[in-house]
Image (cartoon, rainbow, N blue to C red; front, side, top):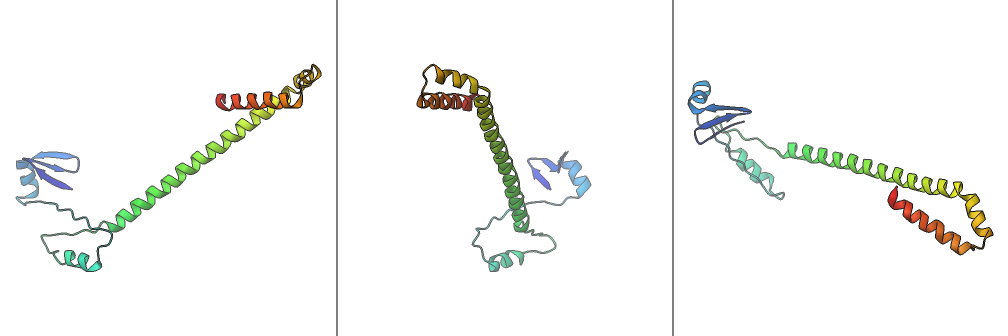
Length: 138
């Protein structure tokens, strides 16, 4: 890609003075015109634009390249969202496992609490409060 702007010519990642550029490339005028069509543009319109092509004018069609770029973007999004879903599921199982291990480790304590007068409703509320608390810490 070669652009020419305000006395400085740029070629890819090279910036040259106009005199050096003209010495290398010749005294040819370069220009670039971008045409962006709506999605409802007909093949007739595209054929009419292509009819302007000659030795001095080169026309390139970026539609296929744009489709490939969009497909790549969609594939990357699917992979990223899949990774996030996997991490979320693993985190959910980790939370459930932590709560289960906590309840299993404290069975004797729950038995002692029931022996001193705690009823089933109070025990369930205590375990639920612990699970809720653990949900935000883990």
